[in-house]
Image (cartoon, rainbow over all chains, first blue to last red; front, top):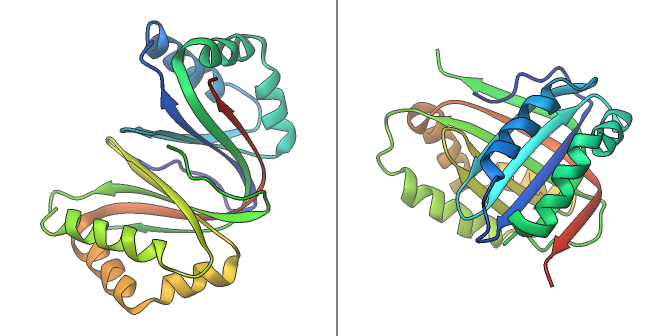
Length: 106
Length: 106
């Protein structure tokens, strides 16, 4: 299901990645980072899907929570390994969610 | 590859969906909307991936371009059919991209 985020405004980190052929250890690290992100202060939810591209969007209360998560020691190690091994390219965008709209079938 | 967007600021529309079991006609319509969006004024790029969730992020020059795309006649018909048939739930978030960062392996 989509992330159950509160009323805007809040922040989204849109991480779009292209994987390299070297995927050893990736799945375990991705699971660990998913769990760890959920424990961070200011974390509001996340959504992930992958095909040729991987897209993960995480939602945060404010820029300070994003900065803290970026600087998390275990996450820094994952970022390093991501650049050295798992990703051939990625783009990360930080965006302020201003409005939202949802639909659920009765 | 990730969308080759210009320097921020610009807007992102994050569309996260859960599909219903009724998928007849979906793939053709999704292809058509993908093409049509690329022809809209203010359109900057899009990225899409799907697993259990579908995530499509499209990027736009400003809120006015998003409003025009939302009101496009052919797109309105697709939105209607999406709610009636293809999606069991979705969430759409409109966010202002404030900064970005990219990595490409040498």
